[in-house]
Length: 136
Image 1 (cartoon, rainbow, N blue to C red):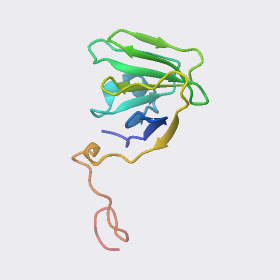
Image 2: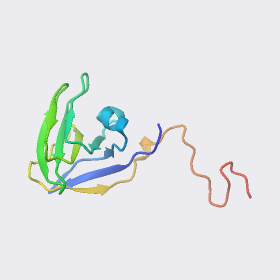
Image 3: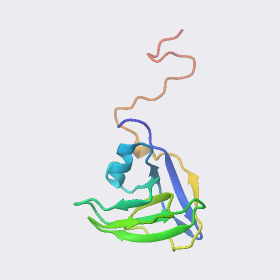
Image 4: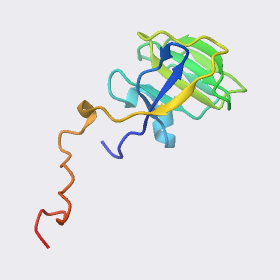
């Protein structure tokens, strides 16, 4: 699955986005919500986002540099949200309620849920051992 996911959660007055994967590479930004585990959203450093053809609807939430919600749109396949004042755009699953425009959101780092672990990932070796598990 590649590098581990960086997870954040956006918080507002009585509202939470749920887990959002921070898209740090160009490929991750292009793939958006299609490339994350089910139930999670994506946080993109962008000013516009489009709903890819054949994908489920998502809430697109634009945030300015202070974390204030500038726009909220339900993106259906082929839809577009563009906000020239946006610095970040959050793609949130449509089953979650969106935040209200004008709310100031804060980001909180979250731990990666265990079910997102790759099944072939080996646990870290115990302290004092080498990667092969042999004693020094």
